[in-house]
Length: 113
Length: 112
Image (cartoon, rainbow over the protein chains, first blue to last red):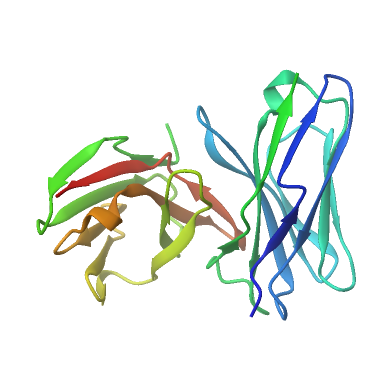
């Protein structure tokens, strides 16, 4: 069974630009969560989606948004990028009933210059 | 007060020893607790989950939960160099299973 796939793996943007990150969950998993990981703050929760509905949102500004499609694939978007948005963005999926037992993708490493 | 606290380490143990990793959490209503392992440059992977007070064993790993003390621990017996990684403690937020609060992790180094 294929794992969680995230694209792109690496990207470099400049301040003010926007970025879209994609996540394909494990087949059969309907819950997708997004996390931001930085050396200073560690792993911080961004969003959780289940069956195309946002169930929860973390304490991030409105520049961070996401969505989930009918095939459970998810995207997150960050607009008006700031230097502080440089981070590893991790997507995680979990089975039919969200359990907190997350399966993480390899992440998308965003560098904002 | 930080919601999930862990000693950042590094924790250094000799090969074959028991490594003890500790975690405290502030939200008394938390119900689910997890240990994730993250190798350098890799993404976190789940190694243990625990939902009720007491011990849960899985191979060389034992998770311990004490809800009264708001304390979770992970013991790694017969530590191997391949166990060298950062161990992340995570706690669920009430009413949301996919929204975990992570500690900043304890870096474990197992010396041959």
